[in-house]
Length: 243
Image (cartoon, rainbow, N blue to C red; front, side, top):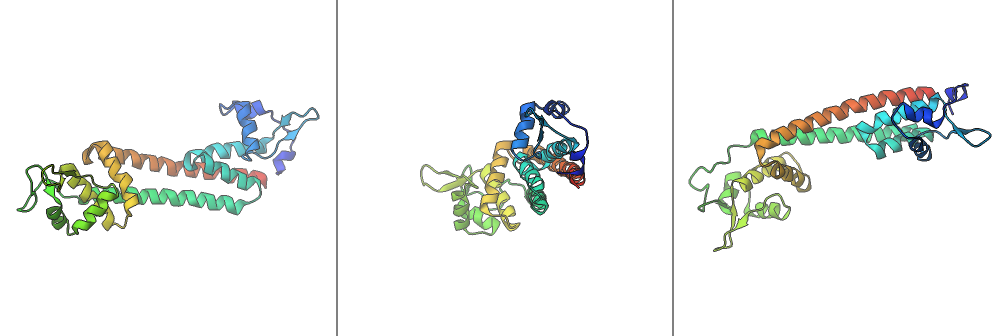
């Protein structure tokens, strides 16, 4: 196992559990899942743990906030199986995902900054009494009407239909969604990546409430990045314990 596993200090499951607010069953579950190394057994069959197991538990619990429970489990299992390179690859994937999330946030913030006021202006801005038709809107953005129809099928925009003519009518919220989609597409984002972001705008009730949501999102990403640092430090300590 590791050099500390040979020390005279022996810990019961309750000793490991107590300091982390866990149950003894959770400790046994972690061992069975490969998160902790296999425990030694007394002549009567009781599990005994060592400081090495305590270090493994600290590493796992520190990895969870940054990487999530499934990934943290896979990382610890790889380490305990002697596959350190696989553990490092999983950690790299977590950092790559965090970077991708940061870029997505930056794209949304940039798109919001670049949006011009959505109020109608110009002679062809509004073709109906309460909205904009597809042709004028497409001309304003420099795109084809077929593109707007594609975005509609992808769920990025949901114009209503004029009951008399059947024409699509884009109200102010629809124009907002179209303009945001246009900015994100120019930034290289795929339709399937844009759709959930547009949904967030709708759920927030518009762009202004979304600013607070973006602030929360940024805070969560920062907290996750810091948690990854903490997890890495505890994992490195565990690797040193293993020798």
